[in-house]
Image (cartoon, rainbow, N blue to C red):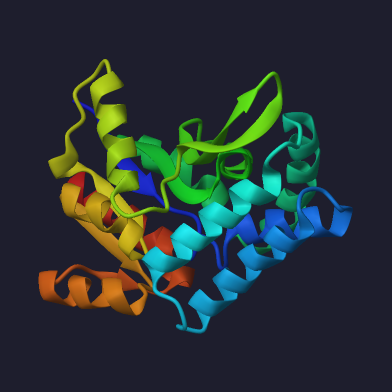
Length: 236
């Protein structure tokens, strides 16, 4: 059987949102619909200041992001993603770059499921040595992006759906009861409830209430890596 460590970036292993870095870079370089891109950032700021719920924020952000990218080429997006990742790296804890190898040494395969755009999620995960990474992804036709999502993990229940797909496709049985999940928002709740060792990292108000009811451990983002490794060692 295989044990996994389900990880999240936005607000969990990295401060802020990877998607916001991408949107900011697109605005700087004039790629996409400028009005819709600014509306994405406005919604994220409203969530940060607790003027929007997580679920409502996710719906607005996904809608505006799809409209902003509709009709641009995948090549254009790939070019700007490389620039955006440079913005992200300074906010990543140095311990993240050894986390994947240390988890594997303890018998856990790390998997990232994030609500941010999949291309930037995969590039950051690759820096960490993680090969399985999933995020929000738009359909494309002949290299041109549509406004339709094939995956949108930030929506309610969508991360759990990604996990279900992984389980169905796995050639080795996944032992969720001996696996780990780390998250910070209600989009992570299904994953946290599915594993034997959940960890809430600076949870938002809605998730914090659930975490307290269930008696799950919580930690600051700066302590996320040692807490994840401690859970892994306790299950090893």
